[in-house]
Amino acid sequence: MANNARTILTLSKSTCRLLCLPPSAATNLRGPFSLSCPPPPNAITNLNSYSTRNGMPTSRFCPPFDTSFNGATFSSSTRTPSMSIDLQSHAFTRNPIRSKIPKPEHPLSAGPSFESLKTKLLGKTPLLSSPDFKILPFRKGWPLVSCIRGKGNDDSASGWDLGWISLADCKSLMALSGTQMTEDLLVYLGSSVEDDAVYWAVDFSGKDNLAEELGQKQLSFIELRTLMVGTNWSDSWAMGQLAVAGHGRALLDWHRTSRFCGHCGERTVPMEAGKQRECSNQSCKLRIFPRVDPVVIMLVIDQENDRALLSRQSRYVPRKWSCLAGFMEPGESMEEAVIRETLEETGIEVGEVVYHSSQPWPVGRRTMPCQLMVGFFAYAKSLDIKLDKAELEDAQWHNREDVKRALTLSEYEKTQRTAAAKVAQMCKGVQNRHSQSADFNTEDGGLASMFFPGPYTIAHQLISSWAYQDKGK
Image (cartoon, rainbow, N blue to C red):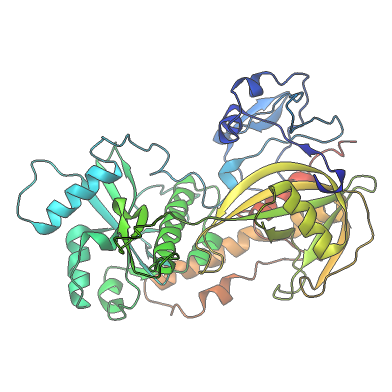
């Protein structure tokens, strides 16, 4: 690997499956080595997602591991900490209608559900039994939202729900816009065996005459990033709905940008209930699949001086700092991308690279329907910053105490409550939905001299994980 860097990973059985390693790779990890870190003092946590070890909270989704895997690619280091991660705090993860995907032959799986949908739309043969089809409309990537909560009505509730409509209502709304509804307009999102329901997404972009009709039912199209900021991250129901909306937007945006074959230029058509597209040219018939754009995001750490490298982009509001990040390039590993991006943007050479967690990010550029943010800790070998002004406005080393102070003083909860109130107002038609991103893309730093992206982002998780752990030297 470049710059003689070593890659250090702690492996679970699920990680071994992902990397195509034998399951024994996880159980062969020997030599106890783990730091379980408490959440920041101001963080809202769901205590049900934690178990404890030695009185400290650990995540049941990512338990501490031992680390002495002797594979050819990985090595262990006793000076690099391994931290437990509460994956529930990552926005757009833990999609409830994808957590239990039925087998292909199951009536609620994509294939049979699509056939049932076609039969129902044709209306020629009445079905003896049919699942409940629930459809989530989107308009220019914005999901339909209701301020009437169906579940999760408790003190932590975010005050909104996705605006699912029936198949009959969807046909009526399509007719109002002069569009005949066909099965190819719907994209399969998932199903619930318990509710005997199948969930679909549909694109209402270009249909501008539906606001009044939807407003009468307290429904409104809300920008996904706005929902993200306005969602209480301790509200597991709303976090699950946010993941569903993120999945739907990613798929519909992919369909929108994949209408033509990249090989011959002919039109493509949706296949497999919207899970694929195929070139309509019979001599080509190229099949394409939903696109994911991997992005590495890393917190670069100066262990010797107990500091972290944070950066600012020119589009940031004053006082906002975050981690370094960049897209992977063809032919490089994720670890190599971390090393390259850090060197290109700041001139800092990186040695050890440690995986933290990952997060889908469907709220980036619409030309990139779903970015996958892959988070790392990277340990600096050099300290002199040589800034690339074309990429960053500033980059500085910040000590741990300053970062802790900023996390404590930043008013993330206030920002969330303010955004949630505005979402409710828009659903009720009290407030116009103009430039929502401009309204909610400015997290409140409170009294802090600097602040970071909100707790729903992997950048925040990287920064807070480092700030509240021991030095690990």
